Length: 271
Image (cartoon, rainbow, N blue to C red; front, side, top):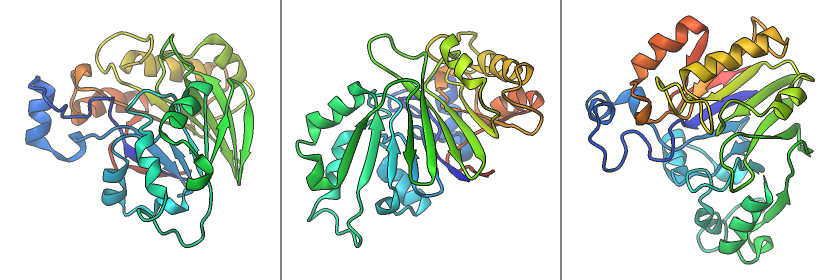
């Protein structure tokens, strides 16, 4: 599987719109991998996780053809992970797609209801909406995807995803704090090739709703101790906030000794 990290920031981006904190000031000066847009990944050009307000920017920076995306999985309906207005651009005269293929969108009931507030008739846009419950598994073309509960928001259902294809297994683990115990129990059935983890809090010690360095390292240690991961598993931290107090190089200096890679916009991984 080919995984492309389109965006790697928390909701406000980095640098944040109006922010003058030390990290945002440094980010504007340093540029490069410190510049982060709202989080999303794409797998094999066909499966996408999340639909942030920076999707058009991702298209431009990565020369994407979003008409070829067949499956879109949404973690939850916070605005930085679901910007449904852009889905209306699938209709004429805004888009002229050659094969007229459908886009299957998967998410919680909250997520689907949010989309329906903007898209009155999904079928006219070639959208097929699927409501997912935690622990439900669906077949999406060559992918098998299982939804697990995230620790993120108490007022809505938030999901993380297990993605299986061609004998490889990915855990897509943002937005989430330290995973709920019922998710851990389900993960014992797997051995991951790639684990993508939320590191929003950076140097801060908090592990509820989002994780930081401490939480990411703790997850890795538990996965290895329980056989969910091993020495060949690749761990990647993403979804960073300026409020985590660390620039890209500072994150690398803290995560690399723990055997964890620091994601950046445009990072590609093949497993």
